[in-house]
Image (cartoon, rainbow, N blue to C red; front, side, top):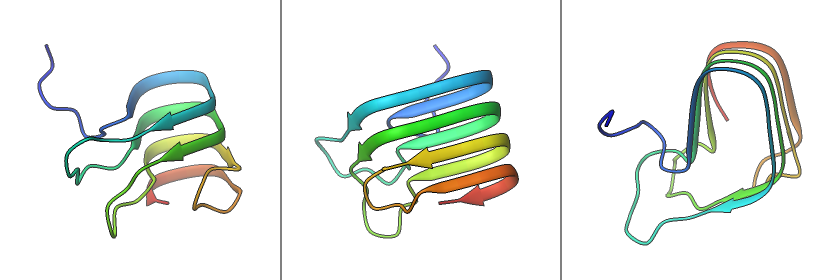
Length: 89
């Protein structure tokens, strides 16, 4: 309906209070998109999330994100951001 989205796993836009726990995403064919892209999201927390990634591909792309937290996500140290205008993790 919307055409290709910027993430292969989760693309969230204009969302408030998102919680993602115990989720694993991967791909069958080579993938250059990041697993998670957040656009205008506030109050988001990821816990124990794993995602396959190609070399040099970030886990998260944050655009206009407020109150972000990621804990025990494979390959990423525990991370908190009060705000992120444009950031990759």
